[in-house]
Image 1 (cartoon, rainbow, N blue to C red):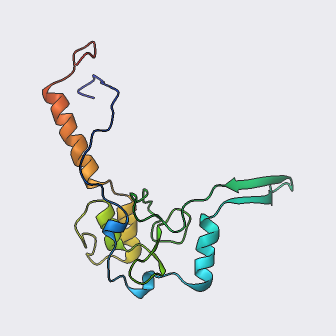
Image 2 (image 1 turned 30 degrees about the vertical axis):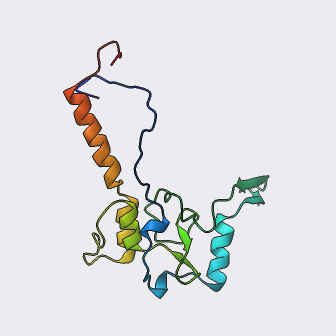
Image 3 (image 1 turned 90 degrees about the horizontal axis):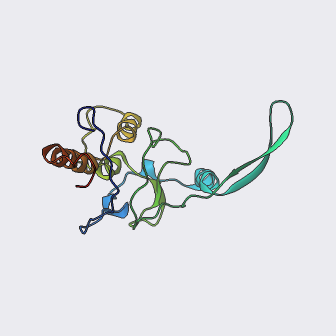
Length: 167
């Protein structure tokens, strides 16, 4: 959009550079508090697994709650999933990785969240709790994507397409 003019065009991804993966942002020295073990690990496994469960409405009528599985643990050689503001809690959408160094399951750290979003290490380490740091990163936009969109908008602003959309 430029002023009140809206432009759209079909695009095809054209990127030949390196891709960041979830595994590429992991720390070698994650603190023990991020590791998930025992009964807590089973809760994670259940949350991320496929479900088809009988449940009842308040009026007593029966329905089936269904949801598909999501990766358990998260896949390290792919991009990280979108983070939510609830990243720091135990829930279905939070990342859980198999730590390459220890071979144990753990949540991703606030520093790893910063890296996934393209922020410098410890950018949110300004006296905030871990929970607040996770919230900030779940509410953030990926720095590199915003930068690329801004550059594209500058290019369009400098060279707007013809009215008929031919350029």
